[in-house]
Image 1 (cartoon, rainbow, N blue to C red):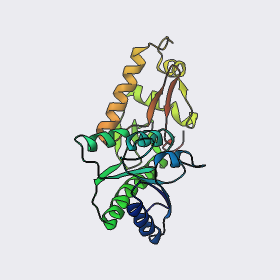
Image 2 (cartoon, helix red, strand yellow):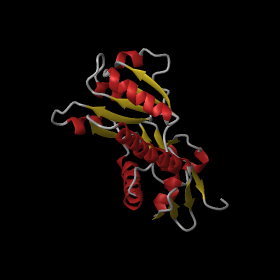
Image 3 (cartoon, rainbow, N blue to C red):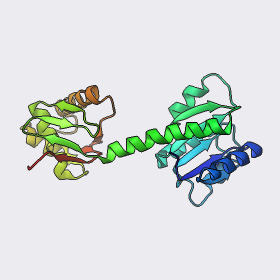
Image 4 (cartoon, rainbow, N blue to C red):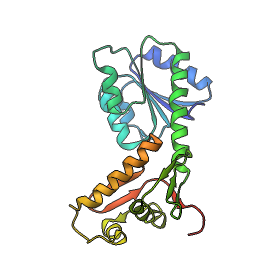
Length: 232
């Protein structure tokens, strides 16, 4: 399982060319750049599905390039570098890379790393696209992977607001009204505490990040498909 498109950013011409040719032989459409500024000046710098980045680059540093990519793309990012300073591994993962491997490394090992990262990305995207199911009568929420979360009355009331919103923001006022709470300003810590406990309950069962997210000073949004289980 490999991405259809990939960009290499590495100032080592021999390594870059050999790797690009190897990946093209695997059926990937590959673009290669000698430095980060060349990529950022391209007409479509953020359009590929996967990026392989060296850290010691002319122009913008490799770590900063990863941060820029993460602002614009959810593509896979693999760091392949000879930089061996203390803290490199932690720094690149914090910047947003998916995996780090150190040079020297074989072309086959790089291909295996790409496959591992891409397989995880595809699985996460599939799970995100599958709907969460809310059974209001039985007070249960079923995650895309099949995990079942038992809900309280307030949890059901809150979550019932999101299927009709179809991915849009549910205002705080709407949630407060449905809960029978007074509509307060954006400092309503009671509603925030309910949402927090609900998120923690879901995370404890699923072990993954909950797509229920706050929209500052507006309300909340469920950033994944969610629908009622059965007629509603």
